[in-house]
Length: 160
Image (cartoon, rainbow, N blue to C red; front, side):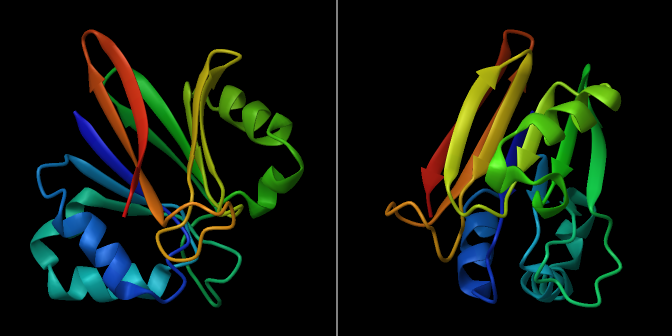
């Protein structure tokens, strides 16, 4: 199973669209907030893909009805997806790890920092895919991939 993870498109519809259209073979797309309008626009243009897209609300997604967090069962794993602003991810990962553990998740996805992060620690696969439009780490805009197979989990971050 292949999952594409993106965050913080902040009105750059073309970057979000590019990530999805270049990865149409993916089984699932997850947008981690601050780009709700971008994904809404994409879904209106590509209704056939709407069922493959999951989203959470970011701090800049004003008047959003999306949840702050999602728990997504994937095969024998569970993904905890959050934008991260309600989990204080700019100050560390302790809060989001506790929330994920409390939900029985072993994969944690977050955005908000605009800084790429990809690690396995404390029993969690943890990823922040950076930003598809305006990274804060001096690197190009980016998105993440998660491949889940019987051999295990492989996470990666790629340039848009």
